[in-house]
Image (cartoon, rainbow, N blue to C red; front, side, top):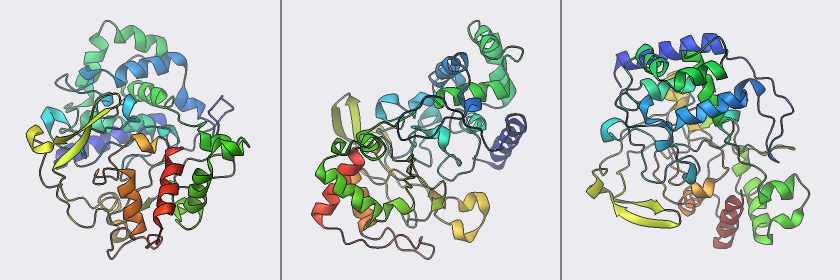
Length: 358
């Protein structure tokens, strides 16, 4: 993205943040899945906002050429991520820089995107909408004008946002309201740890939990609190996965239909080639300590959100466990919490069983 594109995104996000506000959200006692904190009411909004946001999320007309929607990178059947390629596919088939993260429980994230550059869920959507290599809109005005002239969207916005209609703010709030419904909790893990049903986890899964919070040290970054588990410390770390340039894999597992997965030759799809260089959060802060650092992902539905890491370079959870067991990718700025674990095959199997129970 050129300097003009970066400036346009920065100004747009800043303008929306002034209206939406970036202060701490006030939580209420709305019903929520076991193991999750309350959803902030001002983000969740009313059902009309959520319904409108869902329509926008799946609508390809939000892209400049009418071919892309949010849901094409964040696929509901794939944990609101994408199993199809390591890196997301953008405007006119362009390969983007990073993997599409899962949107489960995204309403609770303090820092959005892999580099944590955005902190407001309603403002976040304007990044992809205005990025030339993503949804490609030349500016805020043309997109809003298209929506205002649409015979369905005009009344829908008026109903969801009386007296406001179609604006930069209401579009962001509507999509954020829908994303606030993408909650993943009440798993067997939650019923075992927070619900008191110890039998909800098998003996091997309990062993995996003990490794997760003990020998594996996973809980240092993937936090579990006394009454909820978001599996993130809301921070960023250098695990070493991005330190060296990686060649893109020759093949990728692609889901052709529910339950049907096939290894596909990426060169046949025009998706093979070297992965672009990426220095992570350093691009946002210019702090050398943030080189190759990325935000800690949440782990709900992790068994279904492959491939893994910001660059999709690890295809399976087994590869992820092996990566951390080996001490990550050594480099001058490696997080000190990343070190060889010396897990046995049985311990690895138990850890995987626990992750799959989330």
